[in-house]
Length: 124
Image 1 (tube, one colour):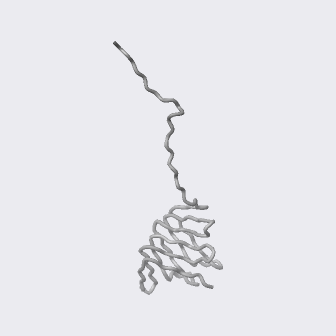
Image 2 (tube, helix red, strand yellow):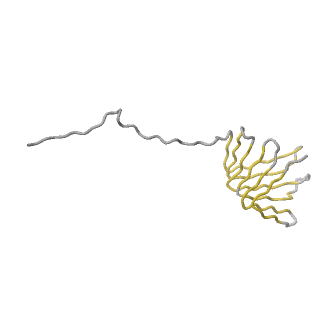
Image 3 (cartoon, rainbow, N blue to C red):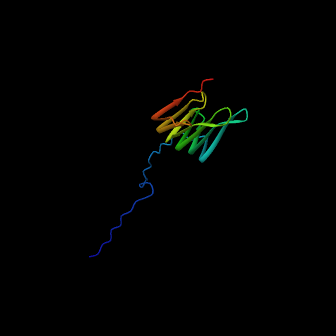
């Protein structure tokens, strides 16, 4: 005796599982391997280099990461200080700067500050 048995499923019976994907806030602007020059009255005040820069408009915050280097200049456009860190952020409302992880600040006289976190307040 010979019998054949078929198993199958209909389209209704097979439903793939769909995982929920959490997507964080998407930046308004984003750039890689960037250099930004800040000036005042036509004079360079700072040059920022970062592996990635992201601008978050809703948080009023700019995040700098993937190694950050900032050169600061005086009124005669002479470099006075260099800051290096792993990442940082700028409060776009107050213009306060925060640097995080392996922060090293060195001035032209050779004085060096090493810390894990540094905040610079933009007070006029």
